[in-house]
Image (cartoon, rainbow, N blue to C red; front, side):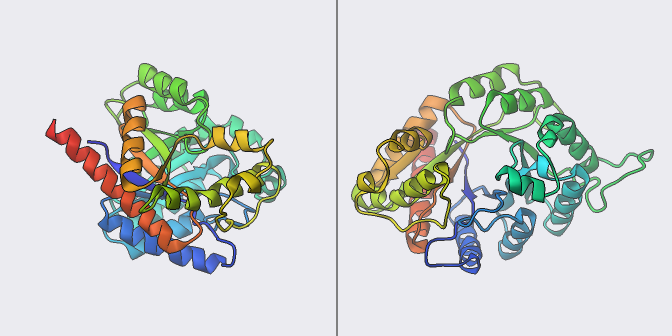
Length: 335
């Protein structure tokens, strides 16, 4: 049985505003809860015209307050942008409001460009402190130390589960060393997927958090009634990713009939390589592709994501994805 979760960047589609994106996020989260998703994660990105999840902890609180049982968390907080104490207080407050439902995934990248990173009043030197910052943050969330001169209030004693996120061997090694769960960003940076998962599993040290590795695989999902519709709704993310990587970020583009004509042929191979961990098409096609990724990488959990312009099509895609995962888990349970 492989649990399935959902990663949402609260995309702002062309023709819409951030208020629409936030409203859609809550609607999707409420539906995801009924479809059996285990977690609903939001990611920190700044100065991105097409993403409304910059104030990630605020949006997590909004989603947690509008749902009942699904775990809600960060996938993730870019720790170099923040003081560990501030994040401990934010997530300690969330855990106090919604006990047993909050996750904290931590990333080492700034989640933005260098000018914006400076505007956040943190420099890239924060990345060099990432391991010690992670340990400091976990300490704030742990049982209170009577000798400690600084405490997170709320936060102390909440023991919010901490995950390490990454797309390289660095995060895999750190998660293994600290005995933490590890989520790999295979949905946009799959190059080191196999090496990172192997290093994490082979070097994992049991801890008070986990007695064995817990590896999460991220998969893009574009599901629809037919293969043709699935490939059509996928073009929004392909086009948006191409624009981002060529220095032209914007709102999530409308889907196009001819993606080959819409993306520079010199850019297209980079887009295809980056987004290769993708399940796309009809319910049967998606189920088959998800089964293939699970068989190849043996994740302990999968997290599905996908930037889709039309909100109803996005709901439909994640509903089909949930049904596919339920069928795969049923098949596994029957064996």
